[in-house]
Image 1: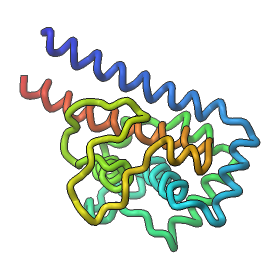
Image 2: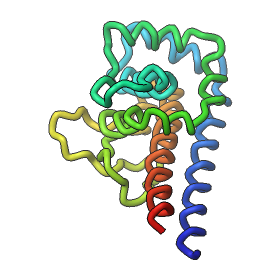
Image 3: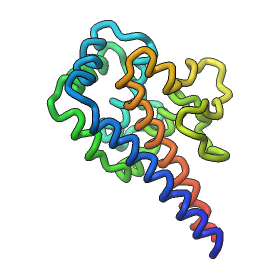
Length: 186
């Protein structure tokens, strides 16, 4: 019973962290959004990878029913889609209204983002790190470096807020899966 309470407290904290990150996105001014849009022609690598991770999560339904190996961001076909996503006037509201439960239908998407963009191993995460701290690295040597909020924010301040939301969403998903497995085993 005590463990169930602890697990629920963990989930609530993760949900609140994602909500705070979403609030930061909602507070982005038109000028800040314009800054992101101006970078889409030739963005720094960290900004491009942040936007790719965001696009994958927001468009996770595209991968429903497909094998985990199908989850990837293709620069040639997906980058123009990502640019259109950012140009859309409803971009911020699409982030704010995103339903995290839809990721349960496509678990390979948040796990792909965790491994390829956030440097998290695809398996369970030992504990939830503070959002601005580096996370546990996946062991695969061919991965690009994990995106870090501070580095992304240096390249483009509003993209740091987007990465924070991506990170919190993925951490919440990973922890929710662990909690559900533990509750089912109990």
